[in-house]
Image (cartoon, rainbow, N blue to C red; front, side):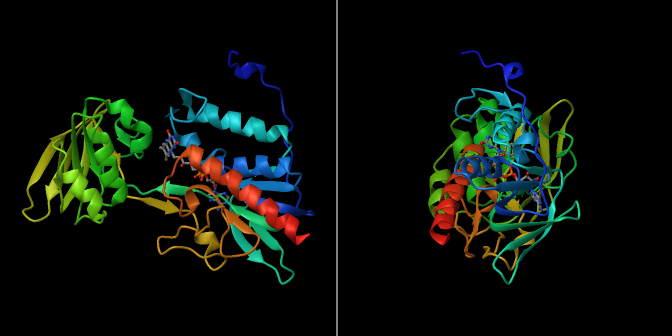
Length: 324
Ligand SMILES: Cc1cc2nc3c(=O)[nH]c(=O)nc-3n(C[C@H](O)[C@H](O)[C@H](O)COP(=O)(O)OP(=O)(O)OC[C@H]3O[C@@H](n4cnc5c(N)ncnc54)[C@H](O)[C@@H]3O)c2cc1C
């Protein structure tokens, strides 16, 4: 069957109601939150959603090539598909507003204050506020984003087949990225400003790969290029020597910043700020589930976030059933 967006049915947008107590409120409208809404609605629960950016990080992705069923689709088109599916179930969504406070009341309900200055109420919550990629903050990073600067080796690695690339970072994700890219790219230069923080087993694996070079105690100064990345300027911290490394891509793998400031004191977080969940998305607080990049799940991918949203929704539904 031919895939034709223009033939998709029109759907009705439903507004959130501050006078109602929802069975569940979902905070975050990325793939995790949207899929949780789909599953909860199909279980017959009254669900509402609040999210600052429709589609979350997917909306910032130029092309997605690893979501099952789509060989290549723009991030925005994939978000449109997600939203259309959820809208068919008439899920009320407060779009483009953030949540500023979440409280548990003495009666065991949850009150969620949003930027539209309304308080929304629910008996349970799904937290799906995602994460932001940590940035290097050097000249050229913003200007060349999407033209050689990337934050996802799993997603964009295949675009750099046969090319020289750099990986910035010294943790597990950077070393894993370097190992993965070494199978696709002609040469991988790993640059980190201090010592490695990656697991020894990964480092042992990496040193045996001939097309990976590592520069530790090396600071990235700028990413250079006109239409795309051409080189990266670095400084050796010990000697002060400045050099320019020719590469066509730089993978920035220096971690995520989970959007969890809001939930401090409500649910248990790791020292890095991720929400600690069990295999089904339950947090440390009964009735509060979490899904996607905001959680301790290791791999941060669209399909994984969506699947975690489904899992959290089903677990929450089970919890809801045993409670009533
Ligand atoms: C540049 C880039 C390219 C990527 N490419 C790919 C790819 O090709 N394939 C792939 O599988 N993965 C890719 N990823 C990773 C993927 O996008 C994420 O893993 C996925 O979007 C996580 O989904 P999520 O729903 O958990 O969180 P997010 O997508 O981060 O969504 C979080 C939602 O919460 C909202 N929110 C945050 N704080 C608040 C608040 N206080 N109040 C209300 N709402 C809030 C946000 O606005 C957003 O709606 C990419 C990521 C980036 C940054």
